[in-house]
Every structure is written in structure tokens, then in C-alpha cells.
Length: 362
Ligand code: IPM
Ligand code: MG
Image (cartoon, rainbow, N blue to C red; front, side, top):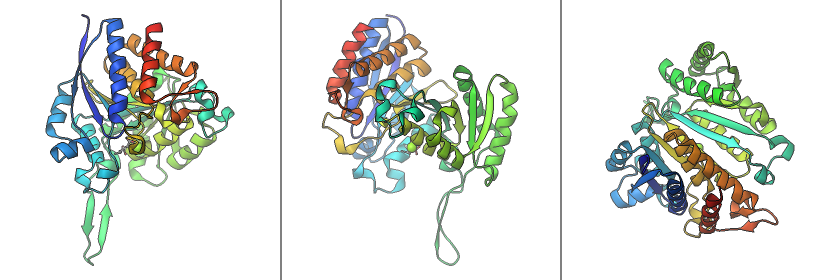
């Protein structure tokens, strides 16, 4: 047996377990082909963890993640837990996982697949060839800044507070990841901020500009976040790599994702300084179709490919999985979310079977 890896699986809620099952089958198959071993440990997170233990991210889950080589997460959350107190919500577990594992860099690719171009709500000529990577800062900014909370003022009125804050070192470390990512892609980096209004953004812009002298091969530009939102839907091909803070990245990465037609196709990677990463689809837990065998497992499978590429340094295995995904799309296989006329509509499991067959062909 060649290399062997300990993988923590966090299937979570809703469609999570169904799409995770497909990804595990695919990983086992590719492992057999390339003599890579995977030792999977499943742990509780999100609503499933709340039901079992009373909290969205049990300490034991974080411990299991820390001991592994990579974490594959599906999706968390659902109506059932949406009204719980904030510290008990599934989303709080996700933020705790990011913070607890120091995952400051979130890579969200949005590349349009030629087979799915008609699934985009934008015109073909606008989206054809779009290939964007959003590098989102993930453990700082307004998501984590202090002070935060709902306080009572002297007049007895309530006042909600969050704080957008970045230190120079936080900006530098995400900036470096972004420049290095751009170097491996089209060598163009657009830094998105709100420096015309926010001091925190002015510091952001100054630091990113200063860093750029270390990366002379990368062409750096800056854009205000409102203009970036507009340009993303007006002329998305102008973007190669985007770097931005936590909140702006949350919003812009959803907009970028939707350019490709379906959020059901997109993986993401959250990386830290230690090499341990969490890999997960961009989409949510889709509770409305959970358990109905309708979910699209491709973003989960592509997240496993991203895990192999960025987390485990197994590019051949990642290539083969990505090729199998292209192959099933080429042969017309589609789940409901990416269905169009003349294609074969498949459920989640059947899509998994098609992938397994495609893998044996590569
Ligand atoms: C995301 C999600 C999360 C975020 C939520 C679920 C906490 O929207 O990963 O983009 O806001 O970061
Ligand atoms: Mg989001």
C-alpha cells in the first residue's frame, strides 16, 4: 500500500449524508486505482450534532479533525435549527471549525463548464470562458471582530454591534495566499474592498499594494465591493483571481458561483498555516430535497478532488476525478438542478454510479 491518509468526514445535515456517500465511494475507487489508502472517521457537526450532543461543534469533533490529514465536510443547517439561540446554531459550529482549525484562507473557484453554459441565468457570451477564483479571508473581519453583541444603551434602547477589523498580519497572510494562487492561474489579482468609506479597507488596500512588490509577475488591481458586484454580473471574464475580506467574500463568492448556473457544482477549500484543510461544497444542506435521492453530488465529489489536490498533494487522483465529472456531463447525465432538455435526469445515487463507471474509463 502506498500513501495512506486519515480523513475526517462531516456529513452534517439535509442532503449532506447522501452526497457524502457518493464522495466516499469515489475516493475509495480512486484509492484502489492509484494505491492510496483512506481511513475515514465520521464525526458529528451542525444540526446532527445539536440533536445528539446539544451543541453544533462538539469538542470531540474538533479533536478528531485536528488529528486527521484532511476534513471533508458536506453541508449543515436546516429549518429545524434555524431559530435556536445563536450560539447553538449550526452556522456557529461552522465558524467554530474555521476558527478552531485556523482556516484563514478560503478558496472558491467559479469556472463555467461548457456543458452547463445554458444553465447560467446570464447570456452565453457573457459567461462563456469564465474562470474565477475567489480567495476569501475566513477567520477575521466582521465575522469575528470585537466588540460584538446586542447591548442596551443608556436610554434603554438595544444596539447591535459587529466590528470589521483586520490587523496587518492578517491581511498579509491572506494576501500571500492570493498572490501565490494568482501566480498559478492567470497572474491577475483584483483586491476588493471599500476603501472609499472604511478605514479597515484602507489598511487592507495599503498592505496588499505593499505586498505586490514581492510578486512582480502578478498584475494587481483594486476595486470597491459595490463596483465588483456590478462587474461580476456585467463582464465577469475580466476577473482571474479575487482577494477580499470575510463578509465581502461571502457575498461575492455566491454571485460568482451563480455565474456558472448551478451552485450544486462548486467545491471550496479552507486552508490554514498547518496544512490541514476543510473541503466542502459551496451549496447548503437543501433540506427541501433531503432524503429524496435528488441531490447533485458533483460539488461534493469535486470537493474531494480539491482535497486531493490542495490538502493531500495527490494531483493525479484529483485530475482523474475531475475528468470523470466532465465525462458524465459529456454523456448527458444531469441531476435536477442542472437538467436541461434532451439530457438524462438522474438521482443522487445514479449519478454516483455513473461517476464510478466513468472513473474506470479514465
Ligand atoms: C458560507 C456560508 C457561511 C458564511 C455561513 C453558513 C456561516 O454562507 O460558507 O459562505 O457566512 O461564511
Ligand atoms: Mg455564504
